[in-house]
Image 1 (spheres, rainbow, N blue to C red):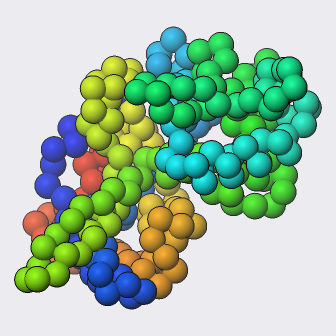
Image 2 (cartoon, rainbow, N blue to C red):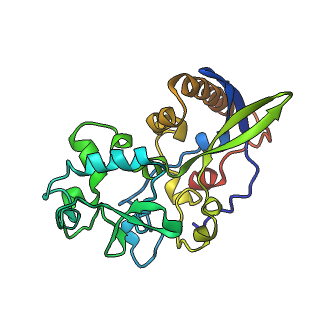
Length: 261
């Protein structure tokens, strides 16, 4: 199936943050009620056709903050030789090193053999193929939001911020939506394949707002997520009970629609 264009109309919902009167959440219902799911190792073609098995890990991960880097470093120090292919590289010399400077001197995970330092190749150990930090979370019975860089556990969801003037007040608008190919800027066009806009990755058992519940709670807060989930539930029920299949009030993600054909 060819990749769909992401310029289609979307349904958005806005509501006040139950925990902060100066914050508004703006959420993409079309994306959050889609059936996207990660298909790494199960049909993912990778963003670089020369390394299809590497998924979206081929460029390494840029840290959002010092706290993000510190959390990842703490987790990485728990990795053992048997579960991390590049253990010896991180432990070279006297200082533990997993970070390098990327574009504009921003800090990111180091690249080893043209992919992220935490990526285990298939020839290392099939049990630990993929992200070593992901496997660490599984081993410790944690959610991977506690071990992986923020950008890695959020993708392909996107959290961004806007400012809005209402009367004499200024509000922060937290936008929760799809991290589309276009959102990457110039680099997005260079990706050979991208999952969120391909029907191959829209075969999940549950919609995104349920399957990615923990990630959304971390990106918002529990009370805000509960309100979002109620709005999504209402939309899903309305879709299920509608009498006209093509009722224009509902915008279904084209990739999800294509996957169901």
